[in-house]
Image (cartoon, rainbow, N blue to C red):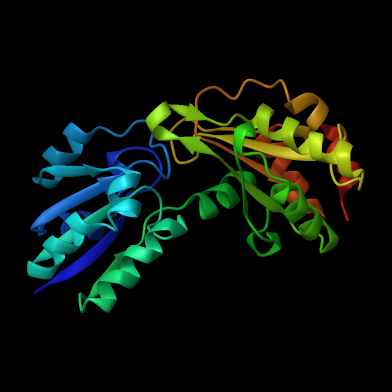
Length: 265
């Protein structure tokens, strides 16, 4: 059978893959993996290869975007190719093109889902899943954009929370920090003056979601901007309207200050 199976690896190490994902990997003719869409802090390629009994071929962004995933598709035309992706395979939308190309070439595709940052931040924070609006990525300052600010503004009008994914450049070992992301948003606020975000805006910072030692801290920007979150990867939540139970969760799980009580709606 010819096919391409996209398998989610989870968020932190080689133990985050599901049993189903591991079974698919063990029966593949060739296994490929990328690490440029997200950092898995404790992932060991050697331990994973021992676990699945397969040699893993690491791919770069260039292999997938400039070469259109040629190496994967060649294997999938003749047998079973497995493509390992951090998190859940299609939370990073860059891989949708590869799946579309495979289907156009008559190659069947399947998905084995993995733990995603989208669900992890809900579980960690205690915020209600149905109250999240559009997600946005905050880029590095050399690729400055007002889009994150605009998305937060749109979500706030609807009372919705905003998950901000912070940019990374794996090849350069660079990860946008929560402090830098907040400072970029404040720069846009200074320019637009729409009262979307300021020093008194409540935020939630998350580091290393999915690991055994995640860091979760809620507070007002004035107190969060210099908080030490440790090692990446990082995420940032700008809450919208907060239910009292969500505030209870942030106090219990994220060390939010008691001042958060006044935010309940």
